[in-house]
Amino acid sequence: MILKTAATLAMLAGLGLALASCQTLNEAECQTVSWQTLGQQDGAQGRATTYIGRHQEACSKHGLPIDTVAWQSGWEQGIRQYCTPDNALNRGRNGQSGENNCPADLSAGFSNAYQVGRAVYDAQTERDRLTNDLNAATQSIVSAATTEERAVIQTRLVTLQAQVPEAERRLSRARERYDDYRFGGYRGGFPGAAGYVAQPTYGGAPNAMPVIQPPLIPAYSPRPVAY
Image 1 (cartoon, rainbow, N blue to C red):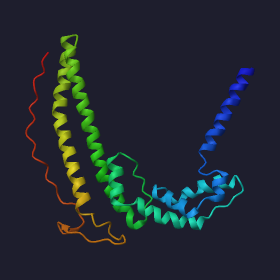
Image 2: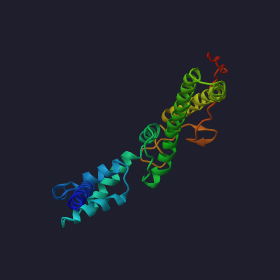
Image 3: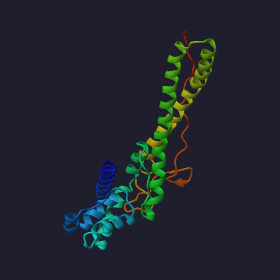
Image 4: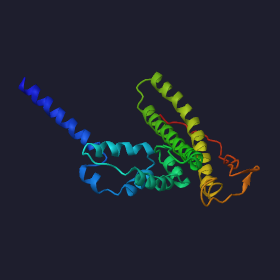
């Protein structure tokens, strides 16, 4: 009984520490923080305006107020740093979240750029997965114990040998579109953004993506697998 009580107390203490660590600010920070700077930092990380509620919750536990106006002023600066074409492309290509809390004039452009970057990440992830599967199958067929097992692996090899080149082509197309997007149509910014410069049109539509022809890749000829 004593051991059970001790374990329960330890669990509650751990839970208390975990909840405390979830607080965005401690008492000293609530007293000294620059709310405008904090708002700019939150915006630059892509956080929504509702995030200030977490600061309010943290500081209210100490009976301290927050400066909503200053935080909002900073957030409006920071969110525009987050909602840039380069940031959207990089986040997509790195497989990071594409959370979009951007202002109306940047929201659609951020989403489009993120999707272009994410297409590269997804295509590369799929290519790597298939390549790893192909390598594993190539290794396993050598150690297959029976003719039946070898036949199953051989069928899998044939499928993978067809899928890997197609995955390479998808990745190549995604990379070309990424490069074109980064250095082409949207290099001048997003329509409606401050300092936006209209770019050359493709097919009559400003900033539309040009049609990218798939690269010419020699036909894939699988090598016979030696047993």
